[in-house]
Amino acid sequence: MPRMVTLAPSARLAPFVASLGYYEADLPDGRDASIPTGAAQLVVNLDRDELSWHDRHGRRHTRAGAGFCPPRAAPLEIDTAQQRRAVCVVFRPGGAYPFVGKVDALDEPVVALDDLWGRTDLRERLCTATGPRAALELLRADLDARATFAPDPGIAAAAAALHRGQGVGAASESLGLTTGTLRRRFTAQVGLAPKRFARVRRLQRLLATVTGDWAEAAAAVGYFDQTHMINDFRALTGLTPTAYRPRSAGERNHVSLPAARRSAPR
Image 1 (tube, helix red, strand yellow):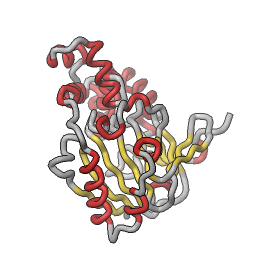
Image 2: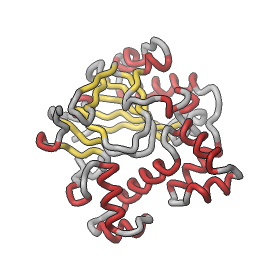
Image 3: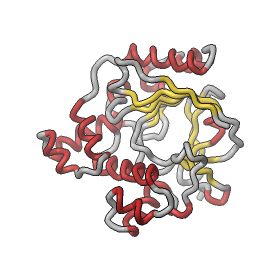
Image 4: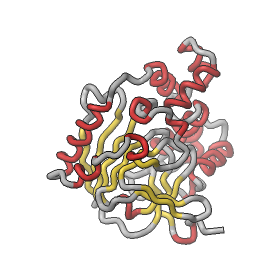
């Protein structure tokens, strides 16, 4: 059974960080489709000094074992071996911006922390921690020291409105901004344009609420009709709703891929 240990962010980090967690599982070699969530993450692989992903042509890309993962609006194939023992920070929308700068400028699924922060021994220190909680406390303290300015409250408010299903125009108006200004600020700080972020968050609301009747769940979260939901679902996950089989009830954003479904070199 997977082992998960979590640690609440400090009061200083709470505006930036949604969660800090340690994950450990005896996973077989294979690949997962990682479904987009709209959140940026900091991931450190404690099992080996490597983070990897596969592009749509089947090519495997690797980075060092401590990396930053910008939010995506498409599925990503990742190796299950990378998930056997890791710590992860999930940022609030816009919360990563003070730590990494313009998130939309990062155009790869994983960016090595050394490329963002300069040479850091963070992974080495986490690997030598006395246990999961000690590792998370060390990580929290490191981020505490890096939180030098507060996130933009307007971006947080816009993200919350978009998550609830409000349109970009209405969200802009409520903040007293033009849609163009909101789009520029939101994209730079969150890493996704507002409309894409709203699509991803609607998908997440769907996955959180569906209990078997896809049509009913689609209507409840704001899809125009079932065809609209199916097309959007395929675009964001690479799967149809009926083919969606999460790795476990608690891991709805990971779908194990059989060999036949994996990207093949072209």
